[in-house]
Amino acid sequence: MNLHFVKSNEKKRLLAELKDKYGIDELRYLLLETGKEKVRGFSGSMTKEEIVELGQIANVEIIGLYLFKKEQGGLRLSLDGSGVLGAQISKNIFDIKNDELESWMRGNNLDINLNKGIFVVKYGSDFFGCGISDGKKLINFVPKERRIRSSSNILTFKN
Image (cartoon, rainbow, N blue to C red; front, side, top):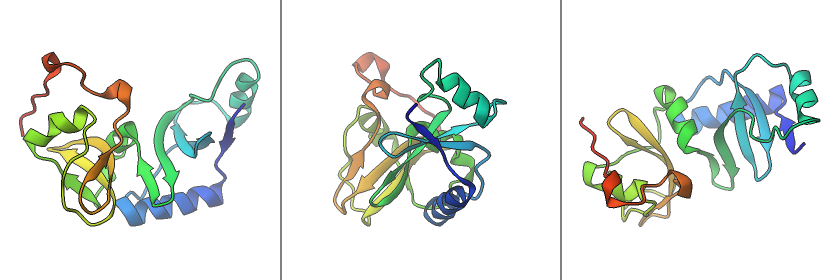
């Protein structure tokens, strides 16, 4: 089993970083760290012991929702993590324009002059993951399987 439960002191540290970077001040999840520095949140009724027991008979690396990844520049929220925690996000938000949204969801980087760092991409009241700015462009992290592939899937949102 390639997952580790995040201990309470580590959860407090992660929460402090999430609060500082994004304004998030509450995580009502059991946190699990899986390979590649990914942190998942589980809100089900299973205990840690039951999860370990299940892990002995099945692959539980995918238990919970992928919330964020630990990176050198800090914690980067996942696409789902930004959506689930969106009501709490109040910092480092990049409001995307309507004409940029489809390009972003196709997996393209955006030529945007921003400070360097990690930004949560938002359109209206919806969140679309995070990007990392190098100062000249916002680098896209929308997973390939979540991207728009054909022109028949054009996004239309109303503000």
